[in-house]
Length: 460
Image (cartoon, rainbow, N blue to C red):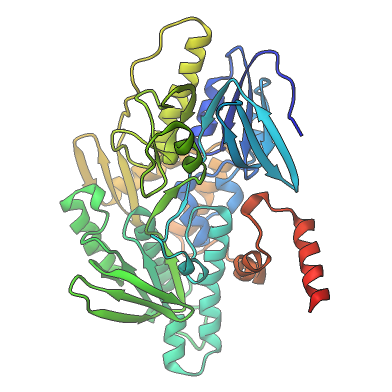
């Protein structure tokens, strides 16, 4: 199936994350037709994903529908599809959704496919230690965290109960620190009066990282300060410890001397690394561009691919000048790529090479505690936390989402409540079920899965 006939210059954007969305918006007044192809129907505000995982926010508040965001932009259409192939010679993109295969031609292409969780070659860990890169991940993590307390309440054996009350978070970057801090808030503030057989204040949270610092990107002083704040929250920080095994009842870590230690924990969450889209391997083979161990492809100074000035790779899928894999890089590159296309169509000279303007970085540790790098300034505490709130509300899409987010923050941070504590059995078992059915991510076809399941049942 070939998608559409376009009379104007056709720009295809792969991905509806920060890079893809900002590119599409920048092309609003350009004399082009734009097609956004994404494996999900929403734009995910990923920096707040951990708050969905810990019951503060609902998924709708940080993941509005892409169609709703772009509905007033008449030159854009949005297609659901998991892009499986890009043919640079034919200028076509192949995508799959609902069992239907679509082939979309392009004149210019912006690849903003994002990244997925990296287990550093140990993909078998995923079954026991979900990452936190999608709404599905966040809902599963929420289900695992809250269900752990439920199972602890049912457990008569003290040792097994403590396994349920022990949470291991792998990765001491921003996501890991934020998760550990919020699990501590749950255990020591929100849930203290909800159980009769469990003292949630005895909950153990272990934060593990193979490196020797917490929030290393924030500098030595803030890193040390964050470690002290985590200690005050009751978070047990294990640094310079490499995870070598994960199973349903915990994990094993190894220090630099080779000594291994077992941590019994029924809930393990992986926040240790990311890898670029699988599309970059094919793009590298077609262009000769280098693809690093994290799956990121090396791009030209203008974010295009060698020999293909019409193809731009942005955000987490590319590597350029050692720029970090953060939302601001993707936003700025999305705007840059869109402007480059517009200038070329207008007969203007190309822009100067892309340069990332670092507006700073922030991470919360817990309620009223955060760290921030803004220009030459390095600071933490309440001021950093308030600044974090303001900036994240500003970047949320939609007035309604901003209002409800602020209200939920008030409930959680000023009070003790959590607005989103509902969990389902489906959240806990969906990953295993999808694996057993061998569904290829979002492009999978429900009726195909049902047919395979029926065939397997008959064969059995």
